[in-house]
Image 1 (tube, helix red, strand yellow):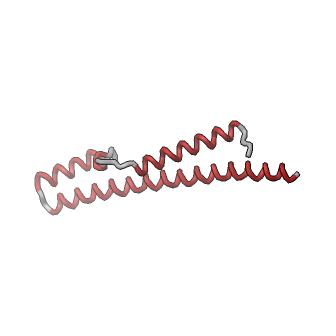
Image 2: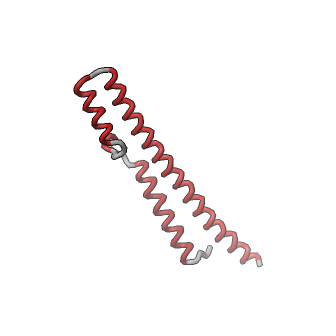
Image 3: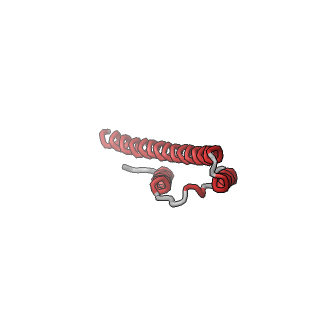
Length: 107
């Protein structure tokens, strides 16, 4: 299997990116509530619920946490989709190199 230097570099970069993205997905994050997405709104909702302890303030707090959870799930799905797309590109590049080599050997 002979890859040109540009293709070899691309494969290495894609593999490193895939590893970093998977590490980001699997790395345990201790404080998910510290995410910057709607942080001020979430802090305000938590403060209101902490001061009042009413069902309405609890509902607002739960809603903000739900929005954060949905945002984090969307980000995780996008990263996973990027990993899959990069894996497909690497597979296509390597497969074409293997097939072109087998055609050269057959000739």
